[in-house]
Image (tube, rainbow, N blue to C red; front, side, top):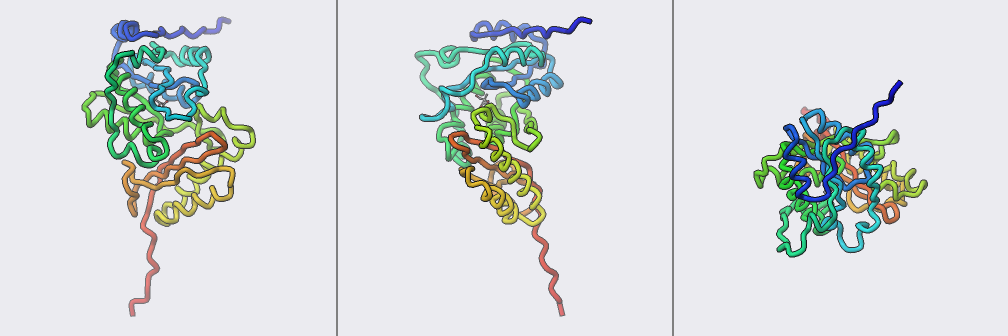
Length: 293
Ligand code: PAF
């Protein structure tokens, strides 16, 4: 019996090579931008891309401009050999793996994408400049690959919302597709940063998704009950320091009193930040029916 060996994707380390490889791809072309350290969540994005497109391009690039001073850019996991093997298994066609100078050449004037007011709230209030860095590199990748569609995880819901807004408001001609978060058996959202957690922190970190589930289950009781239920779960885990717990509408504006909403949370376990979010269906609290006599 012969075992099928996955064909390695073509790898481009330069913009010239990327353009040459992409030009030969049958369309529609899907792009999956990543920072590497690939896990099942990324693989799910590549599979979803493959289902929707004729060709799949994946970028593996740890983008320095989205990390603030003192953040984990230097220690961000870089696992190139394993990433390439995973992308061969998932049958990606082209992988863009450039050095920093290829994406940010010397002598550039430093034009960036301004995320607008949504860039400085929720996650943006904790990481100033982060979303300008994300949008700038994603806009650049869109310009280099010129994909028909691009796929991003819902785990980074604010990032997904901003990239969607960028594509729409700057008329970039790319369909932005959000893909549901992939979770461990205990509900923990997959993230490349989970590998920083000690076994004790990992056990406690399951409370983040538990808090979201408790919040979503309280949806029928209204917005205050959602936040109270999620807060109560987090309060039982003093090792998780809360950066924010916020209920918003689906576009990250103020929470509605009823209807669909999003609950977003970020905590720190030691020096590791954990982000997660979930959909919530809010209903107005039922008023006690008074005796009308
Ligand atoms: O979500 C990520 O991994 C990054 O923010 C992205 C979208 C690849 C941009 O660097």
